[in-house]
Image (cartoon, rainbow, N blue to C red):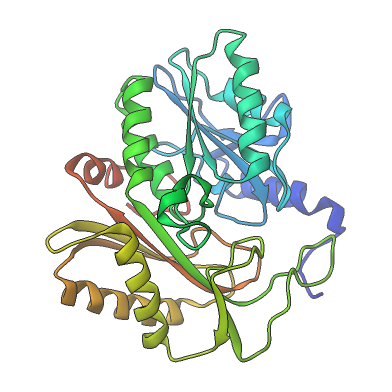
Length: 331
C-alpha cells in the first residue's frame, strides 16, 4: 500500500480537518460532533438539506456542503455508515425551523440510521422528509428500482434540492423537486482496478490487468459482468445503450450528463468518454444541455468511470443551473 497518510486510524479525522482548513469560508466542524461538517455561515429561514455516508468518496459526501447545496453532512469511517448520533447532529445543525430534507444513498446502514435519526429529531419537533437516491441501473432491474444503489447521480439531487431550498420553498416543495430529480437520473459505471482502504492495507477486490467489470459498485459490490478490456468507443456504446433503454429517453428530450472518475481515471480518458457519449446523443437527437466532467463521486484510487444522465424539466433545469458556492462544483 502506497498512500500519503500518517496513522491509518486517523485518516478520516485528518482529511476532514484538512478540508475545513483549506476552505474555511465554506466549511466548519459542528461544535457538538467532530464527524459532522456544516456551512461556515449557517443559513436562515430555509429548509435544511442534509446527507451522510462513509468516507472515501470525496467530493461525496462532505464536499457538497455549501450555499445552494447541503447545509450539513454526517461522515462515517471509510466505506462505513455514520452513526445515528452523527446523523442527529447533522439534522439539528441544518434545522432553521422550516424542516429538514435528508438525501440518502440507497445503502442499508445509511437508510436505517437516517430513519432512526429522523424519528429521534421529530420527537423533538423537527419535521423531516427523506429522498433515497437509487440511480445505479446495474444493481437492480426496472421492476425493482427501489433496490438500486445511490451513486454519482446523487450529486444532481443535492444540487437541485439545495437550489430550491435557497428560494425559501416549503419542505414539501423541496421534497417534490428532489424526488423529481431522483426519478429522472440513471447511472452506470465500469471498474478497471480496485482501491485500498487505509486501515485494511489490501485491495477491495481482485481483477486481472486485462479485465473490467461493468456495473461494479463504489464499494466493490458485484456488477453486471466481467469482461476483457475493449476500446473506449465500444465500451461507451454499451453503457450508453443500457442507460437509454432503462431511462426511456427519446428524441428532443433535454438532459444533463455527468462523466465521473471513480478516482484514478484521468481527465483525458474522461473526455474520450464524453466525446463518444455526446456523439451518441447527437445521433439519438437528444439535447444535451450541459456536460459535467471530473471527479464528483469517487472510490479512493479505484480506476474506472461512470456515466449519469438527468432528464431535465424546466423546474429541474432552473435549479440545476442556479448559483451555488462549492469548491467541487462549477455552475
